[in-house]
Length: 627
Image 1 (cartoon, helix red, strand yellow):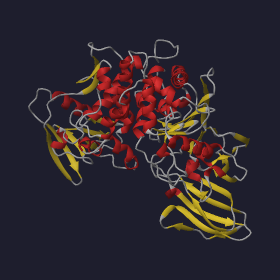
Image 2: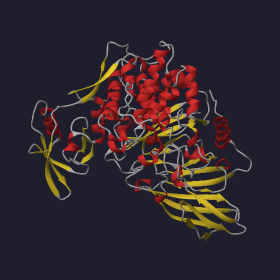
Image 3: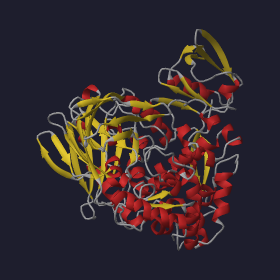
Image 4: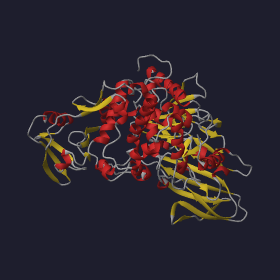
């Protein structure tokens, strides 16, 4: 149901923005020389049609999917603007670092803009053997032009022997230079490219239309050896998404996966593709870190429907300079994370045990002492997402409550799913809402929505006071996370001394030691304290982030000795002695902890039907045994 007048207006506006091709549109030529990408530098040339007089060029600041003003203009170096071969003087706007201005002389119809984009080492979008190209990083656009009137004819020159993947339509290729068909500015920015010397293109779900591909660039040939069981799982992922959503809001879809240990695992959504960066051997079978990356592909895939096709109205802006209002990220990201779990389970990428471990991990992380819940609503974590995504500030996460909408959102939507199943005696579920609300388009259109639109669609599936349901969980201070979905689904959150598979995988992927539910701290592999939990024993003893662990109970520390000390604390009256370095000082901190190992798990509550497992049951035919 599309009840909002604003939604109707914004739909017409955005569809025009994305897909109209007026006769007055101007085509800008963009050439990127990526032959020195392994040296962390890209050479850029733009040819822009202009008219004489003042001109302001804008560098994209708010790029969809980043949820903040993070356009990396700091990496733009050496910009030169010429008209008819003569250099023009340009000046930066002192009130807007993303705008540069110049005067176009009489008689000039085009200008040429050249600059280098310097790939920072901590960004790691390029290695010796692969690169990820995000077009927003290598272009300017003229202020005053409507984005729908700007088309870009882009090309890229790659290092010798490299191949590439992208959703952009290809006009032609000569040697290692590829030119793409002219597309509107927003379509270009929404279509990243990955490339590499070690590259593999794999067709997924050949019986499903439109086509789906897995385009992998890696730092080694071995990393391209995706096990047949994994490929079968990703083929089933396409089938399960089709069964869940119905129509596909794209003409093709490409998972652009870049595999390198120089990358921090990450993913960003696009309408017809996804930019996914994983550790080099993430596809190798039986790797311990598999759980740490398995949700990235289904999460970004689900975003094609939730976030790209249907998008919160206040996150749609007229250009890339206007701030987005992100208060509905608990839907945009939280619901998507829930759907990632649903799709991964149904596709057999996750077993039922692994799904339960994942939800136990989420629930425990949000239910341990988290003083941020005393002052901050979930809504505020979404509204202020740009602060949460800002670099740094990884300490005192429980006090900051930075990005909880990612992890609390799935618990809210699980509860909504369980409620619909109970209210309708199992005849309907959240699947019915998903198909009605998101599955209405078979082309890459953008349709905005408001919270009222979402509630209206839920009421079509299962009439209820959904407004109050969300308000109580999103807009109000709550001491504990919403666990009703787990409990009403027939399970309980408990703690014991068995390792949680999900947390263990995360620990190995991130090379961290997690003692969050016991001592209340996490450590790097070198013993540096990364974070501490207010109200937990370590903080009460005086331990804080940035200190470095040297010894445990009088012996040089190792992860095994720290865990043994925690296990041995059960029934002991002696505190755990941690020798820590804090700057130039060394001190022993006596941690008063006596409860042994505590790992979160879900256990069956036989007094209630098992609705949780039924959510992850496949909707398409597949072998019973998951890979």
